[in-house]
Image (cartoon, rainbow over all chains, first blue to last red; front, side, top):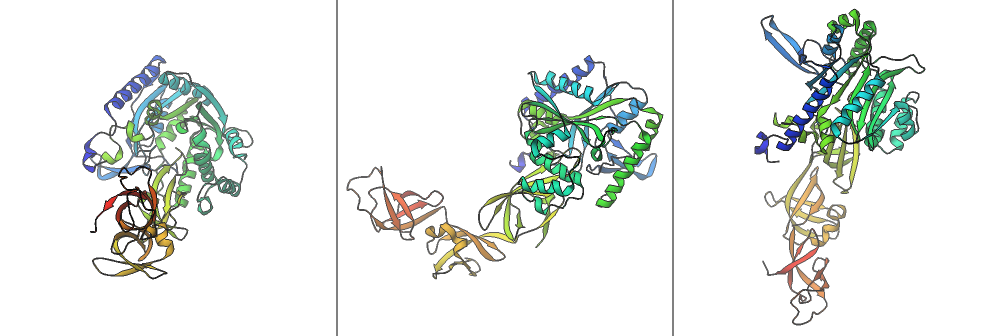
Amino acid sequence: MNPRDLWRPSANPQMLQQRAGMLRRIRQFFDSRDILEVDTPVCARHATTDPAIESFLTRYTGPGAGSGLECYLQTSPEFFMKRLLCAGSGPIYQICKVFRDGELGSRHNPEFTLLEWYRPGFDHHALMGEVAELILSLSGEPLVVERHTYREIFQQTLSLDPHMAEAVELRDCAIAQGIAGAEQLQLGHRDAWLDLLLSHLIEPGLGRSGLTFIYDYPASQAALARINDEDPPLAQRFELYWQGMELANGFYELQDAEVQRARFEADNRQRRSAGVPQRPADEWLLEAMAEGLPECAGVALGIDRLLMLLTGCRDIREVLSFDFERT
Amino acid sequence: MASYSTNEFKGGLKIMMDGDPCSIIENEFVKPGKGQAFNRVKIRNLKTGRVLEKTFKSGESVEGADVHETDMQYLYNDGEFWYFMDPVSFEQVSADQAAVGDNVKWLKEQDLCLVTLWNGSPISVEPPKFVVLSVSETDPGLKGDTSGSGGKPATLETGAVVRVPLFVQIGELIKVDTRTGEYVSRAKEE
């Protein structure tokens, strides 16, 4: 690409048409189900505490904040949407821009578009069904839908139990399976070894014949999902893979404000030990949850990636009006 | 030498890997939505030419390699080393068998070659895309054959063997494409 051509859009005109068409059909899908479209702030005083997600930090100075106020660009609309749910919104969806620092590649852009929705009265299994219905309605062709637990998928592909294996076994597996450089990798947490195995050895083969949902994650990867009482306890969380690409992440949502507070604190302890900045937890989310979050399931779906898969693109830049290099 | 974080990885960056200088060919960012980020990198070992893959934890740093490419004039071979000279500074370097590799068969005195230097020493030598060499040995061709069809092997002054048209005779100069090892045309003394 000639550097002088960087003024040009990265998506071609046909892609912009396809993008608009997809957004229109997504809105029709939710309208027909009486799910309310909402629009929540992108810039806020709080940020995600998730140790694997970095927020952009910016600053507001003006009326109300003469000496300046640190603000974060949101990495997901989750906290605001849950505050709406706690205030009695009923089922809601949103199509919005989110921002994640440090993420750029053929499947990542620091600014991207999420479709996120919440269904009071649904658990994660019911919501997986609705995610599949949405994608089937957009793809216009029948797709096989598979559901596997996180444990099944590791056992089938790598013959190990992801809930029981020690970090050293996971490392040995990575080496035995030929992940180049695995011997030298210094990964602090066994979850990082699981991420390595999943992203390098399992994910490329997922969703090759249709949609593949993975559910029942290790409790250590619960994020904002509830954890069940089984032995070992499992996070009631799911992810969707299609054509070897991660497309969506959903939770049967944690309702307990005190547990939520403990998770924010644990995240920040992990951040401190990793030497990355701690983040202010959303106290208003905690207050809202104390007031009462309806029993619900929620999911976030990357719609740039969805458009890639619907149109057969291999690089996210092809579906963005202007990729990060042009902004 | 500086070190580079994975965030600075891009095609062409020279880094040290297991003691050898390498060049990055491709850098892929891999990250689960809620999980550890990795860089999956394809690299060429500049000493062996072999391409290998390696996964780094994102944010890790690796040592840079002091590698640069420069045009140098091939001077001579003393039986053990091949000597090259910088045409501007007249500085000379010696390349060993491993550095010249198979390209030894295209090296002709005075020709400008692209020499890759690591810490000042040659690790690879690339001959010009086209070289003019004299034919030192070939079967006598058929008179009147100018079509070039069929052809015959010819040994050149540097030891390279190429297929040439039947009309090419011993002592003639020919132009050869070093990338394919194919005869291009007859040539005149330059």
